[in-house]
Image (cartoon, rainbow, N blue to C red):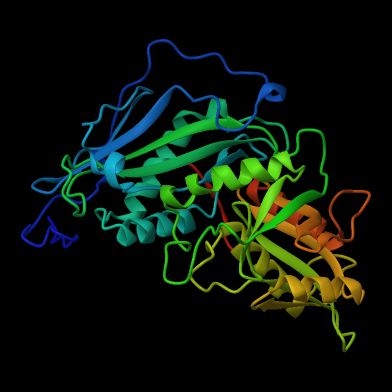
Length: 388
């Protein structure tokens, strides 16, 4: 038993914590057929099983269940339906060299989920216990992980507020569940440069808002601007706050710059100012680039200096016109690393350097190293975790 304080749960003295040892598993009687990898898109197919565990303010976390995939029943007045008390994470599982299921830095995803829960006053949970449960689910569904390079099993942990009522208060009750979906590569026909449309009339996040958290409410407002950008021939949106660059679609944005002192190159990305999601792939790229700056880990690449700072559209134009901008790319769980070749803005399209292979030298090196780590072909600081 443990004391819990969660918004309007101050009166609760003690409740049960999330406990992976209480897990029960019910195997589906009829297993679904595994689709051919070449037919996979993103998030269209679910696996045979799901993980569910609920929170009640009186009793705490229920015994976790892995059970056959099934719809969720909700009261029409549930907090998640009325006030968007919904959070989620995006993770991937891969098949390692010995046929083992692997996760990439899952502790970081679980920690970010906990921060998102705190932001919308959903119940707290034991992060290590949730990670154990996710590993059990992935291990059970290992047959769903595609073995082709660049393919993976997408993992979507989700928590929703389930308290019924229209009063504007935090949700005392919650449902935490995890579903899985086999996924193909972001670029099905090979890497190609993305065309971004700089958008400032609509904003993804604002200072003091919720942009640094993975809340469902951050994503649906982007649907209309994205539709308009697509009609204009662009792939994604480059979200701007005035002239300041924040994110590229749902990805973090990077540029590679030539240094004035000829001491290598700068790896530049917008600083985490509360408007930007602290991406796991972003963090991983910065760590690898810092390591290369201290002791070369990428063959043939110059010394790297990591710079997190405010970037404006005027900066991008000046760097590009002055020949300093060497590469531009976006990073995220779905894409890993994607090249950016064009940014539409008020004064017209900003045409950026492109490469025959799709990605430039730095982007390509990061993509290769991250994928090798994810698939267990290369070790780095225990980032790749075997599911047991």
